Amino acid sequence: MSASPLGRTLLVANPAAHSGRGAQGAEFARRFLGSYSSATDGYDVRLTSRPGEATSIAACAAGYDTLIVLGGDGVIHEVVCGLMSLPAERRPRLAVLPLGSGNDYARTLGMTRNDIEAAFAQIVRGHERPVDVGRVNGTYFAETLSFGLDAAIALDTTARRAADTSQEGEALFVTSGLKILSRAKRGFACTARFDGGEPRELSPHIFAFQIGPSYGGGFLICPGADPADGLLDVCLNVRKPALPRLLALFGLAKYGRHVRSSVIETLKVRHAELEFASAPPCQVDGEGIEGTSFSIDVVPAALRVIFP
Image (cartoon, helix red, strand yellow):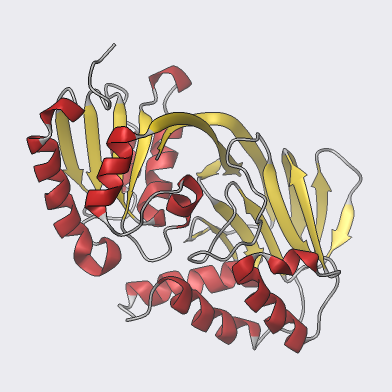
């Protein structure tokens, strides 16, 4: 057993995170690890240069005790997918240095966001806890899976970040949300089964499956979600609200108050099967996926994650 808190450590950093500030964050992290030798039993640093590269790096991390990922929810998603390709007994523990626009996974963990020095201190002094991971059609997600208008909003924010919008976090999600919701006409027809129950005919505008409470830079879509309870939290609208009410619910979701509405249903499930009449907008941790049939489940206690 290593005497250092992190053992042999791999730092995976996205230098493009947070409008290019990831490069500065990675350099600080390198200096920190080099000067604070008692924190690790040696370390390596890998910078990503293309989408998907963090998944490949994490899939080869079996020889490390700790994998620290620096960046936003996108690179965290990639790292989680890579770690989940390893046998459970060979997965290093995961730590997060949040440097991104949304930082929803960091919110779930309680990490300081966009302050690398403070987050490093939390990691070194933190404690390990097992957390769940979601899975849809074989793709893993750390925080969120959604269908419908909320997915369309998330994908729009991703596209706008790629186009170097000056907005970020909540402001970015709100402006995309108002644009998408103002065009909303009908829901997305589907047949849903939850935990092997009877099929339900639904037509939700918003349909989210969560590991943690928030998406979109802090919108509490499932305010009671616990990342370690072995369950997925689900939020959907079961009746079609008029546009003004839909916009009001969007605002209330910032604080989790939308769940009090009679048009909203929340569930806790282990497994779901969805069959859509036509392909809906769909995203996992901000990344788009396509299809009409979706098999969704939770992998309990899949990762060991460092909490502050």
